[in-house]
Length: 300
Image 1: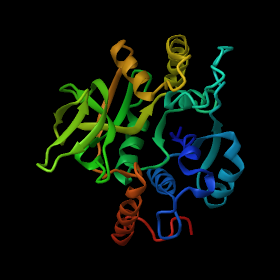
Image 2 (image 1 turned 90 degrees about the vertical axis):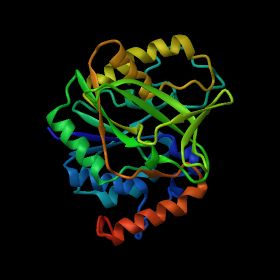
Image 3 (image 1 turned 120 degrees about the vertical axis):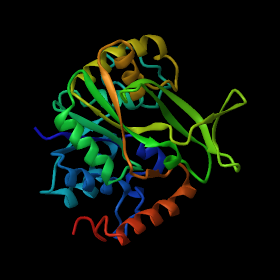
Image 4 (image 1 turned 135 degrees about the vertical axis):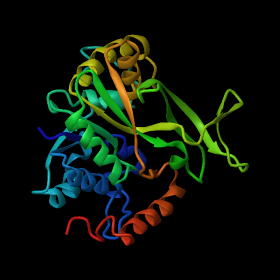
């Protein structure tokens, strides 16, 4: 059974105003997502599942279906505020979706095979998809998941601080802990630090970080469902609380359910954390096209 690629795209509307403004970065108007799907097809994935907001479904389909027709199977999942809340009284003022792990939970019933999860607006690179495909088809099971790990140095922005899930790993390359560090930046001296409670702490530049590229067996979705109910009891009344993929992943490891391998990739990550990042992303993609990594027009 070929693995599935799940793309987290439900948060895009808020960032871009509308689906029509999904930014073009490639020479033929390609979005970052187009490159991920192209790399996934090239690696051997069999299906792509888009997690989107239902109100943008028609616009979204009109963008992606014509170019992907006949190239890979497509499915859609809608992330609703009330999905899987099981009658829980959602605060009336809450508009924000419940976060990335809830988005994956919304795939229940649609994704029944080993799958990878990625962000829609991050460029992960060919090597990452090749590594993920190999893991999903040879090692993935209900006791063995993985994170595709990027070197911290390869994931910074020149235009401001970034937040990253910094992985702690044992001698076997398995995850022991993952901590969300916010306000990470490179200092002029060259070292990399994060700021917390007005304190600066140095991070090794070769630290492996999660860029939300993870590989799971379908049981992960059931675990997310169980933990989501607990999350609602504890934090459901907070208007901005979010249920994150790393939270479920960390629980999986620390409760002894299995191991999460951290598989390093040589790919350079890039993404649009800030508006000012866009020209750099465009230049990076153009350089990859010029080097022959991608055709000038992905879908022609």
